[in-house]
Image (cartoon, rainbow, N blue to C red; front, top):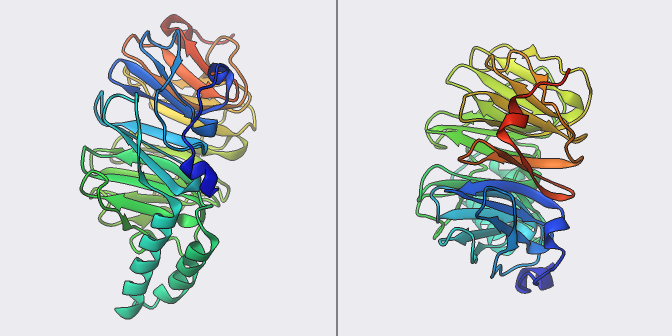
Length: 337
């Protein structure tokens, strides 16, 4: 792992066909991230792609998020956090797994010294993080603005920054996740922050990440994503085609039938307020009634989808095992028969 943390991503003529693990928009540009530190850029709405010029690591990058057309963040294996200030052309390493482990250990140590009853186990887990080295991946990243952001990952790893990534602090003491369940994604709308993870883990903050509470859900399996459609309406999706909707802030839930028990990997609210989910079989599902029901989008899409993002022209770009795929706006609204 240290070699991959210290070796910049290599130029690769096959980069466009390499697995991409997520995609985001940076203004009018699409930015995809994937294996071996490969970052791909498109300035023509996802029709053609080129490799970014400078990425300082060769680990797999799992998630990417932009707060402006120039300022963005990516995370990945080895506990890396990368920053760009030029729309993804070049990236700088702001954090790695060794530093993250030290931050978590120092936080747990401080809580234990302050008499936190739950900190003893956290301190043992943090010591293990330090000893095992940078082998724990970050799996999700999201910034509320240019200063405040979150990175979450395996074994409950969760860090935050309040100063644009210059300094990071542990969130473990704020998230009621004592068993260290994997955290797969973090998304926010304003001060409303949702974190989703394995074994039914779902956490929410309504104050920009200062305090988190656990939300009980009927499904005990993994959530790969969650969306706050408004303050009261939540949507969680994950393994085996499970999609559940709450209209009362998570107090009660209703399962949404999709017709296939295929794992859902990504979802997004589009510009027209419709909602799109993607599954591993390459199926796209769209809702126009606030996630009360979903209809398959017409067409054939690549299997192994991992992420999606919508551009200014209404088209979607899908990331997946075969790279990046553009979905035309007209195709998106056509329903399968």
